[in-house]
Amino acid sequence: MTFASFIHDAEFINVAYIVAFGLFIYGLMGLTGPRTAVRGNRIAAVGMAIAIGATLLVDGMGNFGLIVLGIAIGTAIGIPAALNVKMTAMPQMVALFNGVGGGAVALIAWVEFRESDGFSHGEPLYVAIFTLFAAIVGSVSFWGSNIAFAKLQELLPGKPIGLPGRGQQVVNLLLLLVAIGAAIAIAAGETSEGLFILILVASAALGNLMVLPIGGADMPVVISLLNAFTGLSAAAAGIALNNTALIVAGMIVGASGTILTNLMADAMNRSIPSIIAGGFGGGGGPAITADDGVDRTVTSTSAADVAIQLSYASKVVVVPGYGMAVAQAQHVVRELASELEKRDIEVSYAIHPVAGRMPGHMNVLLAEADVPYEHLKEMGDINPEFQRTDVSLVIGANDVTNPAAREQTDSPIYGMPILDVDRSAAIIVLKRSMNAGFAGIDNPLFYDDKTSLLFGDAKGSIAEVLAEVQEL
Image (tube, rainbow, N blue to C red; front, side, top):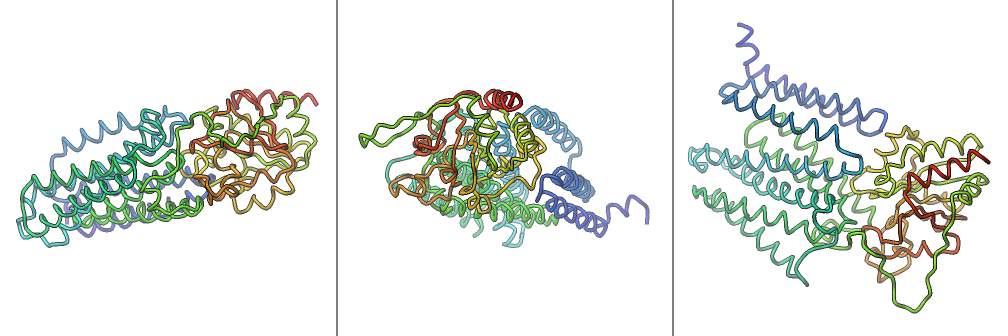
């Protein structure tokens, strides 16, 4: 057997696929911690390169010139975008890249339909079913991810946009029924390409209308859910194409995305159907306060006063939020923590599952600043510690510290587990202004007698506090 015939042999290609998805799984294991995440990404990337190479060895693969052109265009766009994106824009970049995956799957399904003349060449029924499933879910993921990107990029308002009452759910249900009905007709033997285009159009409209009514506070869960959709559609396409690597990669993404979505929804005390149906979430506008006649005032403070409070504390908890990401304050926060630790002050970081605008957003930022992983405390671990915390330093975290979620039954976020910073001996909140968070509601924590607000850019404010601490 010649070398050329050996590498094109089906058994060799299958072995290469096994190696590829073995590297996928091993790389995914590395993503469980920030210290091994970079290595895990590289291992998975090697696996993907092997999977692509093995696929190109399949006989009759097609026009290699177009394949090379596609890879070149994708590389020319993807690498500069990934290198130049700011950490604050990472959530929308994740949404955009995820959407591209779903769109690619939908296009592959369309090509398969055209190549088989509407599944009229005696293909097994499962091929039609999984191809149609990939078209619907991939299209929903693509268009839904675009809306998520536009909301995060503030091209669209972060607040819910939808029809009043139950009109939105009715329209979404009708679009889903149209897509499923057209898919059933094709699977039953109809070969009209117009029906397939109707599937893509109905699914596109469904993807847009499904995400538009979802508010900004739910966006981390939405990104995770759409990621799961893309994985499941890719796995379905892999089954239709009999591509082992695509099946395994899609199932890994789909399963991990589904598990993460469920965990995040549980952390917010929300059901996934209620999130999809549209819920709370504003656009970070002016604070919404109850008109109950109570005079609400806040206590402002200075960097010097904050430095004194921190320097004489025994235990400090840093509570990071999106405001820290916007200000790129994670490095100076790390410097301040190091300075406090030199004085034998215990410093830890309280991480809420949905702080920021994508899953793990705060973990990524703090890992970038070389914060020790063991100092990052999940909500369940840190909440019991607030009662013995001298100072909680809240940096741009609004909704995840809002006591209304515990105490006000009429609050849109009632029942959502929060970080119990209000149980600390003292709370310092860093904010640019009194604008509300992404949920668009007021936070009673800001008016607590134990709370002081330090107004200004978080990075500059922390730098001033650090300078004052160093002088004490």
